[in-house]
Length: 333
Image 1 (cartoon, one colour):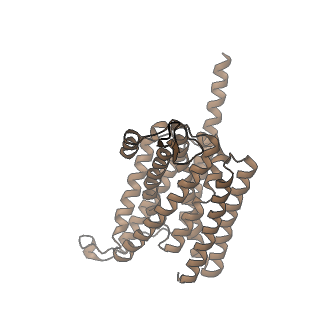
Image 2 (cartoon, rainbow, N blue to C red):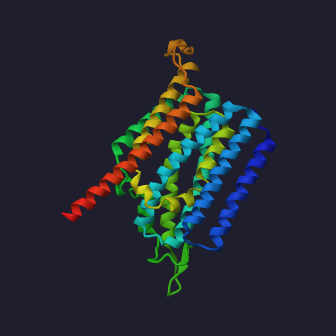
Image 3 (tube, rainbow, N blue to C red):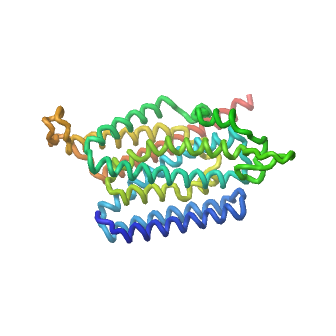
């Protein structure tokens, strides 16, 4: 896929413009969006991504469009999992509802910057060393095993790291969020950091961890840096509104981690098989590719991802419904 410099520039300008509108809305009027507002924005971003995929289809062909849609769906699913941790962070630090949009938007911008850096680094590594797919594949399988062991989402999913503990201990932190800025003046005129700084550190470090998972996953679907970048951007855009739209539904997706674990393990195996095809390691088949290793086509990857996430969602909602009925029945006894 040959993407010219002007296409990159136009894409970046358009995406930055959309994010700038989001920033202006939140900056001028911090508020908790209504279901209608959140649903409209989520629908807009999903339609935008689908339309972009059609554009890829028209200009570059169906294979690249399928890679974009598969990558976008995978990254979108991982981003929804990211929301679980955001919910826990918001509750842990008692972030006022009116400021949660601002926190989410800053978190999304940080995630975009981190993923952009990882995409550039990953593309450079892949161009020079094809064996890096072995590492990516092993890392995704390891992440999948970790998700299975982790089980259902709970407050143990987020633990304060060293940086957060240091900031809380070493910096003068106020007890109030104030107007949502990082610093405020106390009644005595002393400058204090607000808890918003701690929340930003928590969000930023969480974004870093999720970027480490998502970038190998998307490179397991497409090696085109343009598609990797745009799939990540479209997966993160609208995440703020999705947080408010889903609301309590996030707590009901109890099997999402298991579904994502299967998806990551599948992509990890796919990466390992591709690494065998392009093998350059001398201790594997004398440094030559392994022709008997099966190839997993992109259409099969798309079906597996859609099917797995669909089953995980339906099973989660069914279990949550059964649990609620059981709790209701027990309360009547």
